[in-house]
Length: 83
Image 1 (cartoon, rainbow, N blue to C red):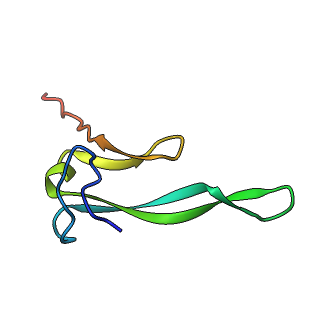
Image 2 (cartoon, rainbow, N blue to C red):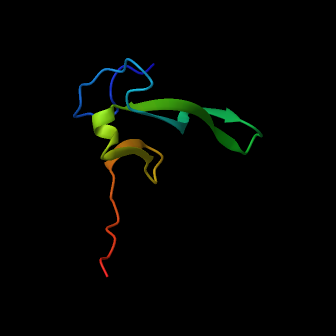
């Protein structure tokens, strides 16, 4: 259950969906592998929700690392070249 902003440096509490941005991410749980065949194992994948408050959502997003971990990252904006 969501209780606060996904940004660990923020203490805003989740109250309403309209305040901020909600992310649905697939999260694999390697501790709950299920055997499909004797020699093949698959990780269990579940949906997990992360919420950024309106202040954090302006300059941050929720992403998955290469190793599958979920983290909060600063948004990078491309600057348009002035011609």
